[in-house]
Length: 561
Image (cartoon, rainbow, N blue to C red; front, side, top):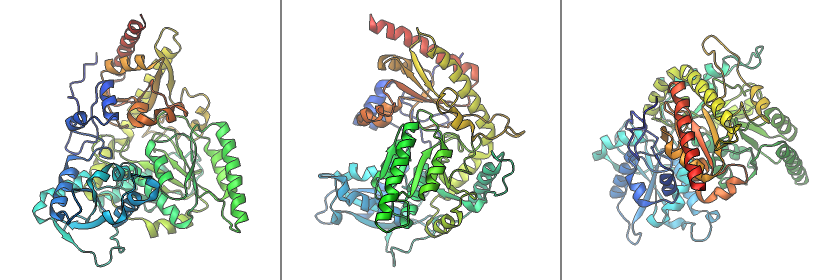
């Protein structure tokens, strides 16, 4: 029998190391308070996903930088965000001062500065964006969505030598260092990822292979999306398409930087028809301007989508992209390297390595891989070699390398646990007396299952259980039932997926908050709870969910009487 969770409110999943990236929010009302930015709750949090709230080491370093920088006369109290590269700091300043932020939100450009700091000789330069403290909400939007800030381990190393913190001048601010050295851990992870992508391909006769040199690292999963988008803009400077629903920051990145994005959030057959019309019109406009391009630089898609696990028709996306000169960029984070092979349809594969590849919720990283099967491989290779800066800090790479050694073994357990839990929840959805209304997972998303299985890897001795990943969602008959289920569910609760322990989150409430009505247009509803299964014993895990559903049905019946 599963035991009640003993993890205190506001702390990380056990073993809760210094660089944990999770938080336990055990009650529905705590999610509501988090969404409402309740200052008492935010103060009580001891751990948090670091793109949402600054890690304690990053916050401590930021405060020291503000002290060393001082306050210029007439500037008032200063806010600060710290980045590992000049480019990231420059983009943050451009974001905050852009008129696109809107009246009352745009920060005057002369009130934002970039100042460069250094502690000791073994860490990168620190690029601090300084601004009026009252503009923090605006600037924080860049930190959250782009994901290009400094890591907690870099901050920790700087704090160890904080007495040496000093401001420095750059002779040429535009001349950027190449980022972290390509150390042993970086090379080992590149080789591991290339091996995973070459393993058990969907086409057994494939001869083209991913080289470790085709793997590019970033400081977070969102940073991989942000920088790939920015690289493409330098060459093509055209609008994008986001096909199907996605993690909330992706749409913001594609909207906020460049000439815009067309969002087809259902990823349905009707959306495919709409996409074809959109591409035709974009190509026609380009021809009228006397240009040869197709008018859309890239079609982005998650495989499958977060949080409803809908799988796009990649083959059709590839056909449309080829017909209109667009690239295809696939985010395979949820499906994961071990389960799916999208190289023959994607020009670029982006992945949040923070999730199941790492698996232990204590490091952030992302990757972008150029497909050697892409007809535009040489073109993209030249672009990446020119634009890419590796800002994955050495100690983060070392942690990721250690964590990912058992990636295949963990993934087999995650696949099995998710499939068994889905089987149970789906049986409840078929029961007219149950509060469960619907389950979302590739195996039960009948309309798009074939789109997923077309790209599943085959069984091999080292990985006998390719499957559908760790993520699923369950919808209840109403918010009251979902609330009762969540409050009685004895697993860890909060944002993140792919961890060693199961996590639950009321996704629409916790992620979209005031945008919940917009999200509901794409079937992401308040009565849904997203589940990322962990490595627990399968029978105990299913029993834990059974008890929560039974309690929720009892509670909901009581509310109706």
